[in-house]
Image (tube, rainbow, N blue to C red; front, side, top):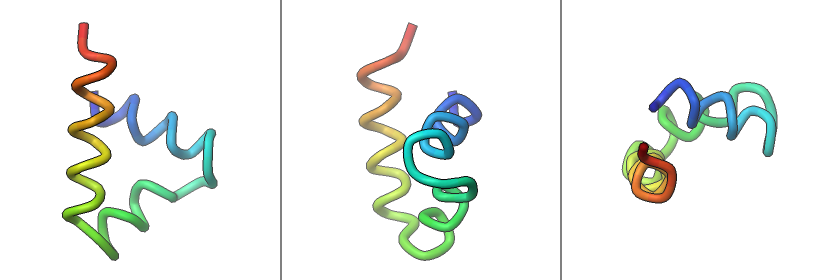
Length: 42
């Protein structure tokens, strides 16, 4: 699921957005990943 999240955010924002967010603001990254997972889990 994390790979899909990273790919989606790279397409929406810019290449490397998820990696930058994870390094600069890990709590926000986890929150956005959790929201994504909750909305799009199979």
